[in-house]
Image (cartoon, rainbow over all chains, first blue to last red; front, side):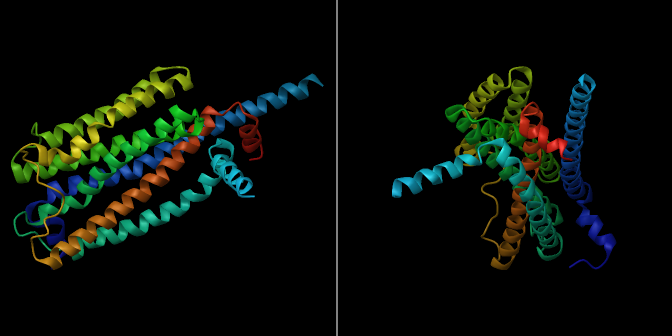
Length: 62
Length: 253
């Protein structure tokens, strides 16, 4: 259907509209899991810190 | 005998309403939904750009439909599912249901945003305006505000159980907006076109367009499930951080 890549990216004159729509959609779908992983890392690190602190407390008392 | 088996079944189902048993199960399911999302996404994009023919009226510009419609559907579906989880949490007082509702809200808000954004970029070349105060567009904008309101309300109440209750009531009241969005194109004279695809065009074209849209919608479904499970696992860790099972889980790492 497309005779050249240029024609494909031109989208029959609708390039701005088509690529802005697909581009922002793709950006959101990529950034959302990255944001969740960052949030997860934060809580996991906090938990590990707390566990280490508790362990230190217990062993220090002995 | 039958009563025994039934009661064991009830126990079995409620087992997964406990965050401690749901957490590892969700972890196992996430990669499965990611793989499905990628497969459906590749197939959907292939059809959207290389199989579906050019539209007689809108030229290549109509291809925005392949993200616009799935995102709009998801924004409404996610809201209903979020309200159901919130309602279950309110009735049964289960922690996990409220966490599920909380995990779905940001994804729903993003879907509503994608719907409005792609709609603007479709409206500009076809209607000549980025935005009009049309019934369909306005009700979708209200949906975005409902998601944001739900998230803001939950974040503003310090006690998580009270936050869950307040959020659930807002979510349930807001459900009234979903049929308004869906039927807006029928109930009012709107600039927005009627239900998704026109099947009056040549059948082969309608078929490939419909397939492209369905595959993209499936991709968005699988993505939303994977994302919701990822987020609910993080919320579980945050909210159950003082329980013994989280301690042993993270301690073992």
